[in-house]
Image (cartoon, rainbow, N blue to C red; front, side, top):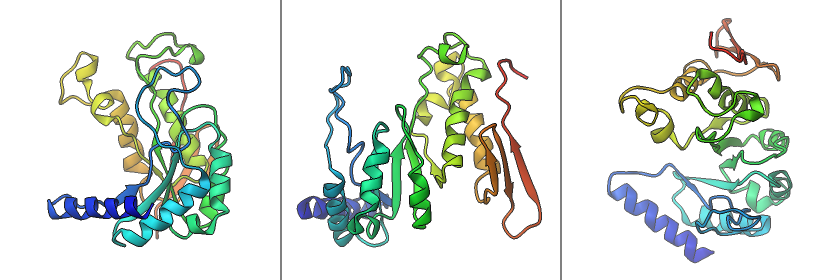
Length: 241
């Protein structure tokens, strides 16, 4: 583990010297998931860490990597992440050396453990989730994807779940494909509907402190150091307004 940690620091230093400094290093993508198991057709490589191994790895990484670069972990896949993160949070080497907790939102998973991360005053980011435009939306009663704004509601719902469960950041990794209209019959400079979804949160939620949220889609967020309050209302309608 120390050799891998040293390699990560050499890589960080090389990127900084090349003019592209790295702010955060994540130890492993989906450390609890083997893509080829369970009948999955995915064939990409993976690397499994137990919570104990992840704790040891972040300790080694924190010792080797320049302190101005933050350490992220564990970025679990989704299924079973509550048990994984709960165990990880009980290990001092993990809590002492992870700067930002990161996890994905795939599968049916219980994210209530995020409150424990919040209580430890640690940042917690949702770092990967995708609603594929090619998939069937029958679970929402919409049928196959047709391009209307209603097909973004599942994405909005996922952002709301993160906000309701004490996540402090939401990273959407597939912006190039999903934020521009070039994949939907438009131009490469035209923003697509999903870009407007995220720009709404970026404009109105970033830098605010949430004081109240319900699962019906209502959030009230006050401006810092101000008596002004911003109220966000999410209307899950099955038609465009």
